[in-house]
Image (cartoon, rainbow, N blue to C red; front, side, top):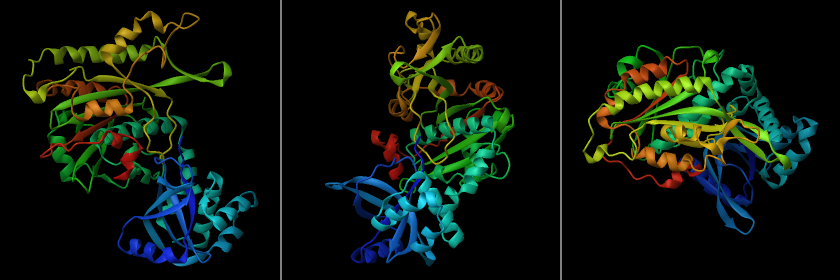
Length: 447
């Protein structure tokens, strides 16, 4: 699981002018640094040092190789401190167990350790409380607020976050804004509560998108939060609402309902957690055990909904063509751990409902002791994050326009199941822009 970290950036005198110009013009700044490893899906806080003083704090990202033993460090959103902070003062406030490693980094530059980064954040916040609003996102106080949430609440937040990230990936929008999540006082109602981009349900943009969504009359009777995510480059947007009927700690997970207005297509994803078992040699085995009484009830509901969908007349328009008109998918993945800083999608298996029914009766899912279990090995094939995102984004799978009009009861059943339902609406645009497959992975953060 990728976590936030920090990077000490020592700028030579000949680079300071260029850096300051980029900051003034709100442009990204790139600097070749010693090669380092850090996930692009987790925040990297850059501490820019000049003449022994911390002058700026910004967000960074590891870029391409910049020569032998060098990587390109891209720095964006750099904030200038009102008063430079002496690095010596920062080091003097560090716990002894962190001082040596941090001192070495601020002498030669480079990536801080996880604990060293946390200690530096607290030291700077003590010396200059107003130094940077960015550091509040990585403070120990924020971490304590997260840990005070119950285990059940954190599990549900993790599933809601995963559903939101999946929707953003399908829509081709940056997931970076999700890293701005900050826990509110007390127990939140949903993951959206901690995002600065959350809008009120009365917001005209949200209401307009909801009115174009089949089943809107059902949704508006439930408690929900709404957020609008937009791309400045393309003016595209995605409206996401999280509807629920139970408090966060009483919810039983999350489902994703994705609606592509251009093609009038729904796709629905239900998340299921796999167990981890260690095999000989310490190699982990992830498995999902059967039978599962709760899943059987959920599939029975899907089947009853499919009856109504199949009763619709075939759609002969080219916009209504689907490789499969069954909109239901299961995503099996390792049990989610709540980490709001990591915006990477959890690896897992997307399985069409029709394929799942074949698996349940396949002799290959029997374990060595006769128990039934689904694993990466015996499932044989599945959609991963990238392939699933690709087929959903262009509505190659999902409901047809006529089927989408009868989904009101489907949405009602999902809302009444005790889960938080993430409903993502991709409004119709004048033209569907092409999305590079690479943008569905870590490179989506480049937006």
